[in-house]
Every structure is written in C-alpha cells, then in structure tokens.
Length: 260
Image (cartoon, rainbow, N blue to C red; front, top):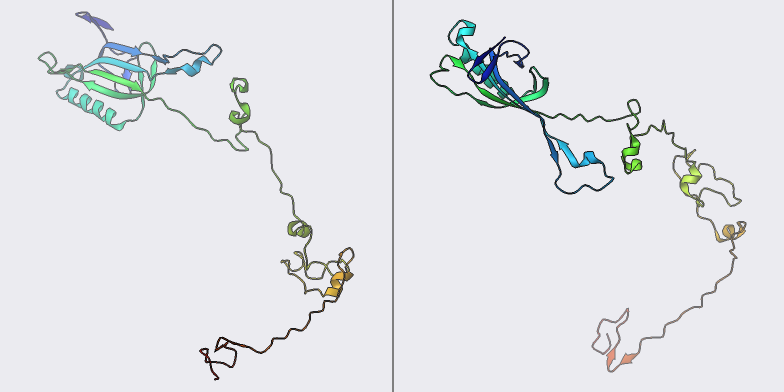
C-alpha cells in the first residue's frame, strides 16, 4: 500500500525490514554501490582488478513509526531504544528493500528530528554501511585444493596452491655413516670391527685402547715405519761467578755475592 505526503511516497508493509524491525512506513531508501579506482595509469596488459577496490555498500533510509499504529503511547520510545541497541551490538544484520537484500550491514548513524509534527511519531534518517568480511582458509593434506586459475598468477611456484606430496618417510642412517668414513677405535688392528665399539652394541662410539707403535706400523696401508730415535744426554756445568755476584742456583740463597 502506498500513499502520498507532499513529494514523498509512503510504503507500508512490503519487503522493507531492518534486521527484525519492520517500519510502519518507508519514505525513502537510497543505496550506494561504489568502486574505488586508482588515479595513476594502469599498465597495458596488467590485471585490471588490481587497480580497483569494491567499497562497502551504503544504505540511507528514512522510515517512520507511530504510536497510533501500535495503538498505545510509548511505542516509538521502544523502537528508538531497539535501534540504539542494534547499533550498540555491532553485529552484522540483513536489510531488505524492494530492490535487494543488503547483507552484513551495521547501523552507522541515526538522526531523529523531533518537531510538533513528529511528537507522537518518529521519522528518523538511518545510515547503514556494509561490513566486508574475509575468510582465511588453511590447507592440510585433507583439505588442500588446487588453485582456481594458476595462469593468473605471475609466480605460481611461490604463490600457487599448496600441493599434497603425500607421506614423507625418513631414511635410516647406519652407525658408520653417522660416525664418518674413519672412526678410530671402532676397528681392530686387522681391520675387523671391534666388539662393543659401535652404536649397535654399546649405543655410543667408545674409542678402543691406544695402539702401540708396532701395531700401527703393522696395519695394512698405514704408511708408518718404526724407527729408533736416540736422544743424547745433556749435562750442565757448574754455575760461574759473574762480576763479583754469584749466580743463584738450587743451593744458593745470597745473590749479592759471597759464599752462602
């Protein structure tokens, strides 16, 4: 049902609804869908969507409630309190008009003029704005999905979708490979593994006993040969007197000369 008041059309009932609130009349509803476009030039061949951003949707509505509609005084006070509570919760809600549904909206501002004509009625101007919600999804082996269009990515190797490579099994490392190519103490003179000198039997690579020079030279391919080394005896003459001073020695305590 619609009626005329001045230059406005009053819409009663119908699809106009703010969350759970249904206006008695809706005088005006103005929606705004805008796109922010970069001011600098766009390179030919570049992705056009990278140079524009969809702005949050705005909706400005002039709606009315009256005590006479509800049949008792104080009805508009309840509606006013409910609008303020809707704004205070800051939880997104849906608004329906005769054009479309506005989802994830928040009540941005509420202007309520009071005059002699609106003493028992409320005709506020309400502004709503969309809260843009993004969702982040993490991928694992069970939820991984391929990229929607990998061709649109400039560097798919680094920015592509996560790829499931399956279960990776580690390779066992043998004791000798872990210890190194040559591990003194792990082998006997004849080149066989010493008993108890490895990771398998002892848990630690404990060095064996020191080898004698004859054992070292007997090892195949050692390149060592036993040679006798003779060190000459050394003797020290008695300490001489120097300039009337007698150099102190083990049995001399008077370093200023003279006999002890």
